[in-house]
Length: 67
Image (tube, rainbow, N blue to C red; front, side, top):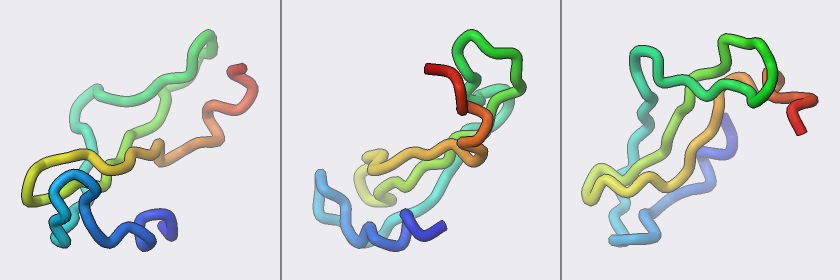
């Protein structure tokens, strides 16, 4: 995904070693007031201090029409 490529350093500690992670098990984001299985959430985080820099749902189209 291109949004991850623009981040080069942690805004909290300045660390340059970043990683990608996701919740496991049933930890998914689900749309409000809509029947759906939802979407996994992915994160970009600093591997030095653990700060979560950005988070994204993998399937944003599941949230259309929820506002």
